[in-house]
Length: 183
Image 1: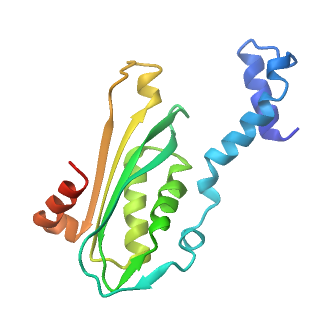
Image 2: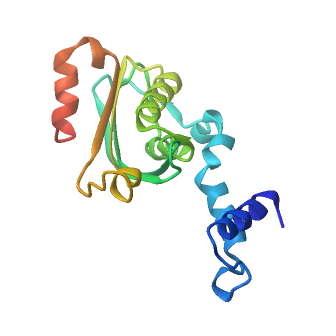
């Protein structure tokens, strides 16, 4: 049994469960495996994610990828927050392969964190790998820590945004991005 499996077994025991009962026999192993997957973003590096998929382009108009779904865990309660991410950027001689946006979102989503930091990390990563003139990232999520416990507000949603470069400096650029993602 791995250390993580043993710790999950201890948690179940502390909750009053019998880890030898049929339904829980493999639960510590499954929970450990699940947690390793859900936090695999720590082991992922941006160069691996991008994998050379940055291409020369003379396009200097806005590129938007919207509705990238993600699942993450809040660092305060280790409960999921689930949502969508919208990314827009202004190329500066280079564009990023489409699937890489989803992989960047997953890389940062699969860590214990707060939504505000995840939004910023995604924006900084896109800016870094593309050398773009500006980037905007909007993240919308429902937080289980607010829905399942505490105030128990089922329809609450949090929206965060980070605007960098021309998206921050130019209101028309920011408004175009917001309009394109339906906000």
